[in-house]
Amino acid sequence: MEQNFPGGKILRLKVGDITREPADAIVNAANSALAGGGGVDGAIHRAGGPSIMRELDQIRGKSGGCPTGSAVVTAAGLLPARFVFHAVGPVYRGGKHGEPELLASCYRTCLQLAEEQGIATIAFPSISTGIYGYPIREAARIALAEVTRHLNAQAGMLQQVTFVLFSEPDYRVYASCLEREPA
Ligand code: AR6
Image (cartoon, rainbow, N blue to C red; front, side, top):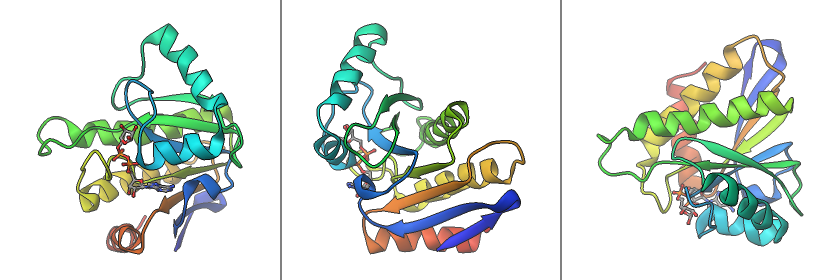
């Protein structure tokens, strides 16, 4: 599914494995220790090779990690991308502990990093909706709201944002959200 925005910008939804998605930047759903883990994080480190963790070790050495709601940048190793943006989503604890704002902040930070790097394409997974337990319908609404707001703003180099959803049911949730609240 695709949606068009001013200036020829595009939002795409697809089912797939983000480690195989060609994009200038792919986003990882990381943890604040930047320590690697399961889910998409594990897949990115397996497919990208050890250089990504070596770079994260240096970042961790300097800054201690990455706060929830933010993201750090590394190169992409063997992945078909230039950069990985390691975004730290919130653990879902009922929704009244600032989770919506922290999740929105992850997407905003990555979109801002994309503009700072001057890149044209970025691919996101569904941050926080796996191991971190965020209900996917609420998470999809937040993710799509942040991306559509960014693509509707005239400024910016970013041309294409792709959500790579890992299952058909996840894809259908994102697609129904986008149909219900189109740009
Ligand atoms: N491509 C696209 N999406 C994927 C892939 C893939 N290869 N693999 C999994 N997903 P999760 P979180 C989906 O658990 O909830 C890690 O241990 C998955 O189905 O990866 O933010 C980190 O180190 C789900 O829809 O991330 C953190 O400790 C989505 O990606 C913690 O998990 C996010 O699921 C982060 O948890």
